[in-house]
Amino acid sequence: MQISNDDLSQHDSSRNPDASEPARPQEPGSEAGTPEGQAGDSRPGARAPRRDAGTAGSLRPQLPALVFLAVLVFLGVFPRLLMAPMLVQITRELAITTGQATRLFLFVSAGYTALMLLSGFVSQRLGHRKTLVVSAAGTGAGALAISVAGSLPVMQGAAVLLGAGAGLYAPSGIPTVVALVSAENRGKALAIHEMGPNLAVVSAPLVVAALVPAVSWRLVFAVTGLICLTAAGAYARWGRGSELPGEPPNLKNIATVLADPAFWVVAALLTVAVSAAVGVYAILPSFLIEERALDARLVNTLIGVSRASGIAMVFLTGIAVDRIGVRRMLTIVCSVVGVFTLLLGVAHGPLLIAAVLLQPLLVPAFFPTGLSAIAQVGPPHLRNLAVALVIPAANFFGTGVFPSFAGLLAEQGRFAWAFVVLAAVLFASLALVARFRPQTR
Image (cartoon, rainbow, N blue to C red; front, side, top):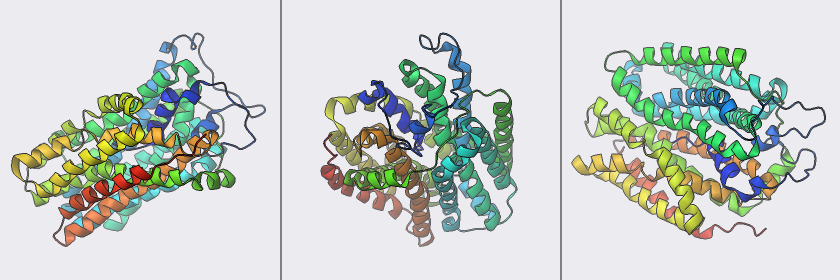
């Protein structure tokens, strides 16, 4: 599962007690550069997006707009997830090594991270709604560029563009969702929105399993890119959302968040979580096909089916965290996921198939647990800034650096060691869990 601001904002809005409290006065710029801060309308003369009559009592009038946003976030995630199950075909056609191929994820992550951090400057000029149009168009252009790339440098540039388009989405998408609905409907609205990335995680490998044996991987990317561009045009014409400008990051507030030791513990844990989720997803098809000689269609089907439990697991974990606490839940998740990640590297035959199906089962539990941890980092009014800082770092290392590291091991004939090393890091993370000491407030 790809961790994103939308994942974190859902939990923060729907589960955090502070979310239901009346808005407290803020100093100017106190939440600069954060999603929630961008969603507010406290600035003089700011115009809030129109809401239909009856919104406070019913979510139904806003459903078309929310579904439209869910489609946009789906299209922001889906093209990035296509690359992993088609990496073997890309490697062979471009005549590159496995290490060079896996480093493409690093380029995607670099574009994603850079534009997420700079998104406040873009939305400050364009407003959130137009930024979403640019995001969908950029993602579509990146997918089209990948479909025609004939060399490694062109593919790397296309990967940066693909990630950059996706990186613009969350800091403007979440304020748009929040602005469309009243406070009592916010949790349900964000749950609808969250269906987009979850469906992308399940559908991407299944689409590849169904289509790639019959059509070229280039055609799959090309059609996906055209759909993204069509969605961008449709949202520019009919989409509803916040016209408010965003705000660039506030360095004083950033320093405050970074000074909290708990921030670094949570950042490290979420980096491990993204590595265990998206990082493993990125390299697993190549490993199973090239190293374990499994059929490509079987591999992609197994990976798609194994991710189907993610939606239910997110909600179940939220309940469990309330009952047993953040630290205990993180201990359970790190231990169980570590065992199955280790089996991916050392098992063969039926035990390997079982590990493929079971390793992702508890991985989604990292994220709502991490959300609860982030909710305890820094002063309450800077909580979303902590989110905005930790997400790019976790994505860059988990979805870019880890797959690249695995590719280097693959070139040395030690591909399986990537899973063994990650399992060791998961077990070592138990020490970080024990050191998690949020500030008392």
